[in-house]
Length: 240
Image 1 (spheres, helix red, strand yellow):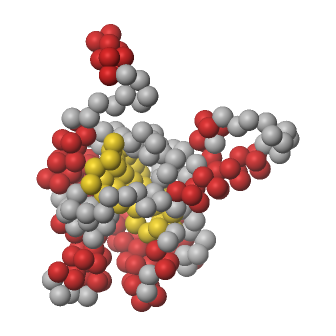
Image 2 (cartoon, rainbow, N blue to C red):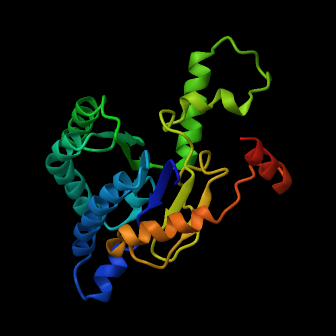
Image 3 (cartoon, rainbow, N blue to C red):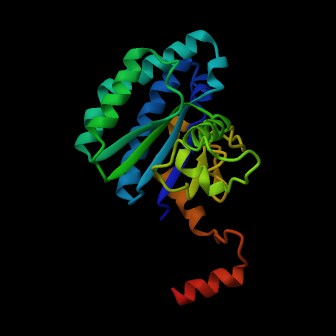
């Protein structure tokens, strides 16, 4: 079972279009899919679930749709956080929340504080997040913490890891993207270096426990070598 699953929740708009419904209907149905997936993740013993809710590029969408998404985020925070807490779920966000309205920022801070000691599942919502932004802000924070570092001195990759937005979680084992697109769209560029990728044509509002099981089943067929040979992996497994 993967310890950490990351998901790009794609296809809400197309789900609505197929049913001749306004796009907001797909976004509301997508929230139901989030609830279903969170429950399924807990039941399967997944420890970390990271959901790409709103990318830094999504501000380019029509203003009315962005407004709907912001309102949906606000309402979800108001209505869902107490339930998450009762279920033992830790809530985190990653991304630049500065452009969001103060009410959203306050609710996020309160949710993170309320659920900070929960250990059943860490649910992370990526909001106004981008992988390139993450690496850039990590570098900025690193140099702020090491102002004495000599110019031109080599920086090992692991030196930046404590400054990445997702520093509190292990790197994802399994990445899932719904909606048929086969790209990672600036999502956790650093953290997905050795993650197993899984793409499905299923639109996000239709994603359920069975769909999660299908992704996990695919994951279980993979041999994760992390740069080693297959023979080395097999030998290590025998020794372990």
